[in-house]
Image 1 (cartoon, rainbow, N blue to C red):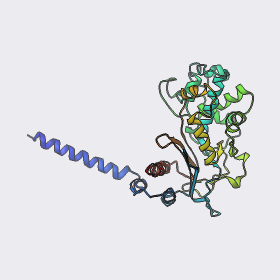
Image 2 (image 1 turned 90 degrees about the vertical axis):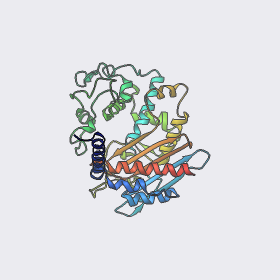
Image 3 (image 1 turned 135 degrees about the horizontal axis):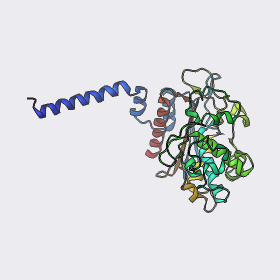
Length: 346
């Protein structure tokens, strides 16, 4: 008969071996040293380390209350031409743009031009029968990614396809089963904000970007935020690189907003301290969306967060991505976290 204590001991040893084996096999060791290495004394040193870890270029903007904003960069703005990274370069901010759209919705709700409780079918009757539960998905659910609508970016071939118009993009998400019943779960879906963008244009009678410019950018005097690559001098835009591909993704149009780190930082500060809002608007915004965001498209990763414990906005852009295992995404988060630790140590 096997001794019970001995059996428990053996099982624990086997469990430990299994854990260690899984770590050896599955942990991306590329991340271990960036995570565990000694924290440098300065942000400049940390960004140099980030380039050594595999980023082509990286930019950081720091707005600490009571201090002048600080700008940092390392690596390349353009690798092929050996142009050093410039902290004032334009950058594709990808899903950080959702913050601007959510603010727009809050303002339109406060104006009485939209209702958070109205449904998708109320605003887009033509989509009845093409999006499951369209008659019970509310605008608020769409803003919060609780609609259950599949994301067109999750569909096979999206990133390698060329689309003639926006309708072809939306078609990827139509006539598919819902991921869940509305309001019952959460799934980040770019289709939600694709429709929100159209809704802003439908209710205002102007382009979404014109509304954002009038109600957000101009009041904050943000002159380096744009709707797309078609509005900018391409020499001002930081290059983007995808691991394993030599081609620069800068000229590829992913329908992303473009901005400098400083412009994003000024916007984020105003979002968090409430100065972006007119009376009553912030309460609406707080009920529907978050106060920070990240962005990711081929060649461009961005992080925008406010840290209340040190009253500091930190924006980080890096121009090297890899969707195959998202190791670069995690590496970007590690570097960002270490930058914030350096700031807290001060």
